[in-house]
Length: 342
Image (cartoon, rainbow, N blue to C red; front, side):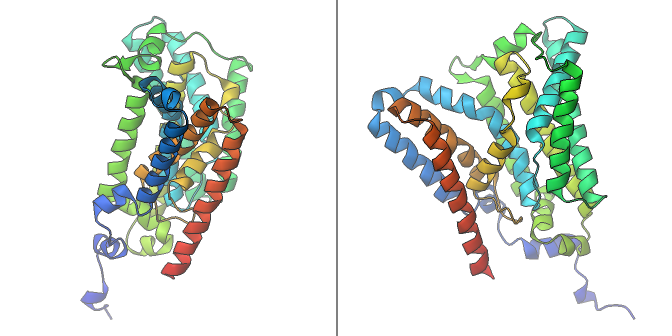
């Protein structure tokens, strides 16, 4: 006997019922306004204490440059956490992609645009491959994201060390360093910052306004319901982790441009920093809630704290305490919100 017609909902209709928010509300995020106000409050406080040092174009440039690479990582991490997953491997994937990018540019030789493009393609490709490995093991082998990405965290970093013999690659094209690494748009805005903000904007719209974004929220809200609505949950999870891996590869290329070396030992905490930024930005660790704009604020709060503490003469170690307190408060507020919704 066939089911009544009204009981059979098309996948898009079912998702529309599950996701009542308009696209612009997803772009902004429910708690992004409050997170943004906290960031504004921090900026105002440091501006009052040290107006001559903190309030300057040069200092704003320093803060945004420090935050740029982490913002690219955190953008991919946002997609993963919205699906109720986690990616501990992004820092190691950044290192591996940077190593492979440096090797590819060294193999091509020269110092022109073609060499730089080869390096970028290599970084994106190898980052995406690690993302595919993560997604495949999580979706198809049914291994928890924590274990899979913890394993690939060690594998990617170990592979980078094997390839380089533990020695940083320093033969980076000067044009890459001079343009992307230290160059500025209109002589003022660092290209690193421009690229990071463009990435955040593009993926923010992707998350808020496209079917891919709606599927991401649906999988994080209730994977089984999403599967019954006709979404290929396994396939979508693989795509989400590939997004995170590819953006980690881009971050590896940007790191080469900024530092002129692979900095193998300099990214051991990038995974935790990206997760912290995403959670501070209002994305729920339980999935289904989050926005890229919130992540942008979450990236800049620790950067402003660190910079402000240094300028005001406060030991920068206090920044870790402050960020930790904000992180715990963000998770606690998320739990209260979930309890109230129930």
